[in-house]
Length: 267
Image 1: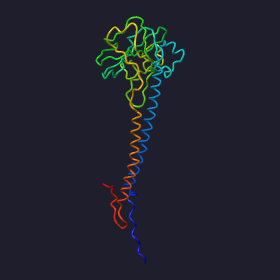
Image 2: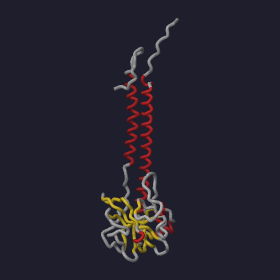
Image 3: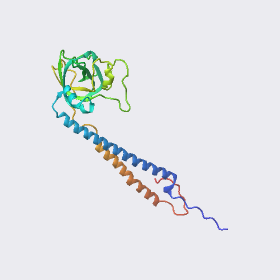
Image 4: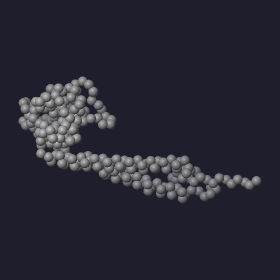
């Protein structure tokens, strides 16, 4: 009877511990590439936004009525357009926009409807106030009496995206976490439309030191998404180059035929 030859030892790179390593390395490369592509998309979106900011802030201010007549009520079409509106503030309907910073200082912003006299209003973000304000109406941030002309830029209504806190769906809100015009419409008897106006200047001026008008939007803000994309692709390259080198070194150390192999990763 011919004796049966002993089985050859398995190659170390096909042992279960190495198969797990192969899968982890592949998953890491795919994950890094996907993250890099996501950062590239964010970079492209930011570049488009910067182009839009540059083009729109350079426009001459036009009345809100004129802009709506030409562009309609779509928030995206009106976003960042310089605009003016004349009306009378309604401090009794004022709302505080919580948790906003200005020049590194924590505080809030003041949202006050401007009655346009035709059954409609535009919500005006009058600017920043310190955290310890009392209101609304906000003490120390009183509105001018009588008609005012407000100049600034338009922004579309804000909606919740993804996770995060939510304003109560019912009741009268005195403090909000976002400028959700549909939600605020529930407590204001004038049509608020689809955009609000961020104040830059007004005539007559504010009677006090607050609110402080917010700075105009500038291109070039936000995280450096392109740099982040390069970093993620570099991480993928490190794994693609480094892992095969690790495999070659491990294969070069495998035992000769008839020997034993612990199957452990090289130290």
